[in-house]
Image 1 (cartoon, rainbow, N blue to C red):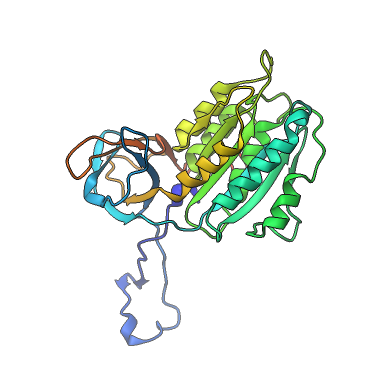
Image 2 (image 1 turned 90 degrees about the horizontal axis):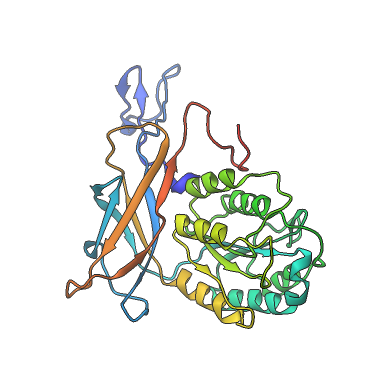
Length: 319
């Protein structure tokens, strides 16, 4: 469900005329048509003051949303700590062996700092992408199941980061929460994925998820690629963290959990001059009640689905 395009307009046609629902069931042989002509774009937005603190108490009048430079009308607005669907995507390759215990502790700390009703899943990846939870449990809020999922596999092998992100974004779309997020912990390198970076970035554009990335690597690691982690986070409206070798990761994961719980949701029906598929640039600004500029973070673009069958399939592989 790319960028949460919801079905907002139902056109009911009866032999070319609008169906009057008060008259009961339509006569036998009449047509019942559903059209999906209106698309609602929902954005997760984080707002901070110059000191870095979260800004609460804003209304939709404090925001301006631009798509491809055109000012949009905000029709939907929410500012509440609502449950989300969230995935923890944890690098389980051999390079992470020495950090395994601290990464697991950070993952548990993230879950404990999150909304208790969040739908959570775990993806562990090295040469292969593996689910942490049992097959019959796609999401859970059970801390014991999630703790076991984080430590399920032994760190070894190479790194299939792109395949892991593609899988996690696809799995997120099966969650029953409107708000969605991923937390990706890796060095940013990839040396064995079937997916390509361009496939990952296209899927990020088409997804509803906000992606947070945490770069963990040894000094001089030739496979580390913080640029990939920054790009994924920036495009989706998330944030990239690059702690030093001795910096603890646990408080970073707690900070990400707080950010997810302090976001605004803005929705608009795009004003467009074209319905062609392609990338749509987004810019959001916010002013405080005393008209001071605030720091806003949200996704920078999304991609309108290609209705001619081109583009990217849900798992990120080219059609």
